[in-house]
Image (cartoon, rainbow, N blue to C red):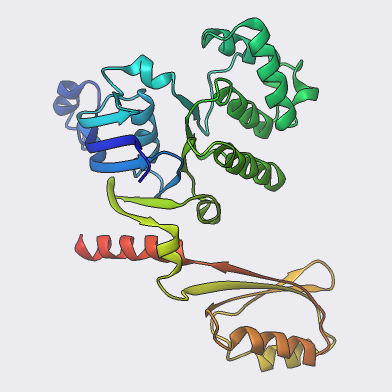
Amino acid sequence: MARPVVEIENLTKTFFRPFARLRRLLKLRKPAEVTALRDVTLTIHEGEIFGLVGRNGQGKTTLIKSIAGLVQPTRGVVRVFGFDSNAHNRSVRQRIGLVTSDERSFYWRLTGLQNLMFFARLNGMSQNQARLRIAHLLDVFHLSELRDRRFQEYSTGNKQRLALVRALLTDPPLLLLDEPTRSLDPIAAEDFRRVISEFTNADRRKTVLITTHNLDEIERLCARVAVLSRNTLKTCVKMDELRSMGPGRERIAIHARRPSIQNGLVDSLRNVPSLEWSNFGDDQLLLQFDREADDARLHLVLKALVEHGSEVISCNTQRFRLQNLIEQIEGQEQRGA
């Protein structure tokens, strides 16, 4: 078993609303305090890409910031490489790289290169060491041509790439990513995932914690995933175990040419449950439906398309195993409420 990198024990974080006495005097209904996390216990091991999922407001960002030492726990302990994130904040920050989805700490009037040099020197890197490291990372993230452009002129996606470059400046052993691909286009997001995979594959001692609403991203990148619901940690499972729980449901999306006899096709597929039709361009269709893996619905739809003179352009399958797990947990929460 690899050594623990992040150890969280009974973490609770409560935010108190200001002017509590005035709020009581005015009889405002909102509570004076909000609990963002409640009794969370979790261990992340060296070399893992660990996923954290949950709906908005369930405490994912608060958990990330607690590990980074940016939020002080109300109760409980967070240790990073054995250092208490509160008592040894400086030692913790030296060992992590942090990327958030709403990055606001860059200097907008400075260029990308000037920003990176500033943060590199702030982290104790020499001028020559910083220049070499920055040049390498800018090349990896295809930002070399933008290095002399002011940060305020960067697109949202390029700002996010620059934030990742900054997080990797010191080659940290722990990378914390809070919805890092939310503002990226599909190509940039895929590049980002590739770099994260390379980050851990190149050195098995590297560890990544990532939060995202993109469940496919979690399934592709992560070895383990934890689910937050109602601000508590409900479960933590290995992706391999999740995949072996059974065939699960699939969402099928078929992109096809519109057949010459479309009414006949509609009639032949009338009994396919959950089938949705939509026009795609001037002469194309998009058909989507759910099925249990390995049932006959996919064969039935493809056979009907061919028989009615349609040409199948693409057929994509998306498995919902992680989504099913989240829906099951939230359904149990609602029944127990």
